[in-house]
Structures are given as structure tokens and as C-alpha cells.
Image (cartoon, rainbow, N blue to C red):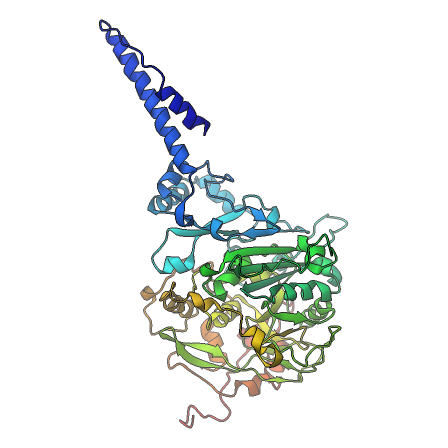
Amino acid sequence: NKRANFATTMMHAPPSRPAPTSGNNNRIGLTLIAIVLGLYTFGLVETVWHLPSPNHRRRSWLRKLTVGNGAGGGNGKQEVPAVGGSINLSKSGITDVGQDDERESEDEGEGDSGDDEQDDENADPIPEARWPVSIRDEDGNLEEVIHPGHRAKGHPDVTMMVPRFWVEDPTSVHQMTLMPRELAMRIGSCIRPDEDTGSLARGDRCPLDERTIFVAIASYRDWQCRETVTSIFQRAKYPERVRVGVVDQIVVGEDGSCDAPHKPCKEDPEQMLCKYKSQLDVFQVDAPLSIGPVFARHIGHRMYRGEYYYMQSDAHVTFTKGWDVDIISQQEATKDEMAVLSTYLTDIEDSIDANGKSLRDTRPIMCNTDYESGQKNSYLRHGSQPEAQPTIHGSPQLEPYWAAGYSFSRGHFVVNVPYDFYQPMIFQGEEMSIGIRGFTIGYDFYAPERSVCFHHYANGKNKKARNKVPHYWENSNQYAGAGIKAMFRLLGVVHMNPEVDPKDWDHSEEERYGLGGVRTPELFYDVFGIDVVNKMTELHLCEFVETGKMHNDFTKFIRPDGMGIDYGKITYRFRDPMNLRRTGLH
């Protein structure tokens, strides 16, 4: 370090002898010594700063001294470089933030001027559409957050760097009311710009085959992840309009990365992971930091960059040939801008041939859900879903529930309903969180008429290989108790635990990760026969859903502009036709 060396050289320079008869000389000498000592101290601090830091944690007291001068710029926060085409969070992404840093952030926020706040209020919430796009191109656009698992354990010093949301504040878009169609049309990029305006945000004027798709995958030490990504690009009719974002939670040295091709790209550049590597963003996380699918998918939502459609998939899925054209045609057939196509996926066995053609004429539909207990709470959990030939033809079929394993929608669903950051160690319950929050913002859920992908379950010939894949709950001991706190929050946000005092659960950023203003959770519970007080559901809801009665009765109230179903016009309330629970027979 030049400054450190300079200070050391000065320290060993011969001292000046003060003249015994001059007080001025004494003062000059003391001043020089003070300067030398100051330079030496500064050099020492700089030297210590650049020493390796144990346990991948930064020294907060040094960080405070050097704020504004950190690597990568931007408030002295460490930027994580792209490595081999991936953003490698890994161990280098763990930092240390102490109480001084939190006060520092608060002080910075308090120092904002009123003019800046007014400018923020008037700012356009929708960023400019771009294509092609990658988070690798966003220099300095990472955000330092406290790891939610460690936060729940009372360790706010463990932080990590994550991508920023494309839209930071969902309420700036849905504004706690029904989102105007004009605003919805501004979200979603086209691969070619409008000839007149030059804009890539062309709304429904964008041809179907030019509309972009963002696919989010959360993978935990899954060797099939790269096969899933390969299938996505290989089977798409228009792969040039597809971008994949993977949150790859692995143990480096033991697990392969999701973006690693079977052969070096120089040997076989036609491999999908080579040919479309510019359209693949892999955000790598050390597996011990994994705290369940909610946080991984939260990061996946942060990787969205304004694509026209959003698709969520597991990491062990095989797609059909032309899946992109098929699922878009199904989405548009609903004539519902707020439609979200979602279902549990059918097993891969006997479902698809070697050329990617589906062998199935059946599909699952989401309607079988009941209460179970866990995490010191009672919550709704999806059971096995009925699979049969659709009763509604020419369109996906309306259903009450959303499924995490597969979801396809317009891109604004991600903007308006981001995964909750404060739900570590949650597995059961995530689907209720997203589904009910989405319902309150105005979204409607549909079962696809045709399956465009199939799931590799640990069944049959896949059982042995799939059972070897680790699960995130191998980290349960490290984050013991975090899931209980998260479940109280999850249920509190969607009004599913009225017996719990709201003071007993975490309300952090509830506006960002909370409800909308179009419908209420209570309306959802009332329509579909859910008793949140006694923790009971009306049985046989599938008879109302699977037969197509729900679809036929409700879709006639889709608003004239296509902005979702107007539940204000629906008076129907489901009750078990067999009346089993209310008569004590179940």
C-alpha cells in the first residue's frame, strides 16, 4: 500500500532537533510529529483493511471509516463480480453490517431533501423496456440485504448482495386499486421495437411470436437443473425471445452449476447452454445459506427485467416441443389480462415422447386443499389434485388456487406480487401467500388446458436418482425457529390467523409484500368456503371447480377491458353439497 509505505518511511526519518531557545521551533516540531503519526495511523488502517477477513464477514468499524470508497463504488458496499457468466454470490457475497451501519443508513435516509422526495413521487414507476437484457450488464445494480434466516435468528450482521427489483415498489404500480389497462400494457418487452416510437414496450400490439418470456427457476443442489434449462431453449419455437434466470443453490466443488454444459463450448458450441448463454442468468448461492423455496424464488423475482410474460418452474422439468407458442396461445385465450395459468405438473413417465410431443390429453386442476398443522400454526395445504380431460375447451379453466410448481402469467404479476422476503424456512404455505395476495390485487387463476411441461418426481425409474438430490431442510438446525416466526407473518398478512394479536408477528415492509385493494382475503374465504376461525374448509370444492361450473359462472363477469373478474358481481358462496362437516359426519 503506497500510503502505508509512505507513512513508514516518514516514521523512520531522522527527527528534527528543536532549538532550545525558540518556542516556535518546539511547536513546529510537535506539529510535524503529529502529522507523521497521523499518516502512519492512516496507512496502518488501510493495510489492515486489505487483509483477508475471516468467516467472510467485513469489519464494520473499518467499513464505517471507508464508507463511499468500497470496491465497486456505491455507498462503500462490496459489489459481487460476474464469474464465468454467472453472478457468484457464494461466500464472497457474505458481508458484515453492524449497528453503526444501520444508523448510517438511517442517517442517510433522514438527510434526503424534500425536493428529492417530490421527484420520487413524480417519477415513472415503470422502467424503460429493454431487450436483450441481463442482470450481468447492470454494473453496481446490486442491493445489500440482511440474510432473512440470520435476521430471524437475531444475527443482523450477516448480509448478502442481491439484484434490485425491476420495480422497487409494487404499490407504485397497482396503487392499492385495480391497475388500469393502459398501465398494464406498458409492462412487457417485445424483441423488436415499434417502427414509429422505437419503444420495445408495445403492449398488445406486439405480435405473439415477438413477446419476450422470463423463466424463473429455483434450484437446490439439483443435477437436473441444466437439463431443464436445455429443454427450455431446445423445445421453444422462438428461443431468441426467452430469458432464463436460475437461483442456483449449490455446494461448490460438490455440485455442478446450472449453466455448465456437458462439454466445453469450444468443442460443441451448439449446446443450448452455449448457444443461448447470453440469455441465461445464473445467480449462485452457497447451499448453507438456503432457507427454502420462498427466499430463492424471491431472488428469482428480483431477476425479472420487464419481459412480457413470466413463467415459474421447478428445476427438474422437461418441456414439450413448441411450449412457448402453446402456453402463450392458452394465456391469450382467457381474454383476461389478469390471468395466471398455474397447476401441479403431471409426472414425466408416459407423458412425452423423444421428440417432445405430449402423450397426455389430461391435466391437473387446483381445487383440493385443506388445513394441516405445523410451525405452531394451522394453514391451508394443497393435496393431490384431480387430473382429467378438461371440461372447458378452447380456454384454460378457472380455478381458485395457485401452485408454485408451475405458473405462467403476464410480467406484471411479478411486479405486483413479489415473493415475501421475510419468510425463511417456509415450504408449506408459500402458495397461500402468493395466491391470496394475488387475488386481492385482482389476479385470476386458471388451469392450463394442455400441459407444456412434465415433472420428474421421485417415482418409477426416476426414484433412485431423484432421491439422491439433497433438500434445503438439511440446514434446519442452523435456522431453527425461523420458520415459526415466518409462518405467523405469512398467515397474518393474508388474515388467516385472526386469533393471533397482530403485535405478535413481523410487519416489516408489509406494504411491499402485502395485500392489494381490489378484493379482500375475507371475500376469498367466503366465496370458497374457508373458515379461518375454526380452521375448516367446505369439502368437495372440486365438484364446483372441476365440472366447469366455477368457470362458466364467474368468467362471464370478466370486465369489458379484460382487467380481471369483477367479484363485486358474484353472489355465489360455495357450500359442501354433502354438508358433511356442518352435520358432524366428517
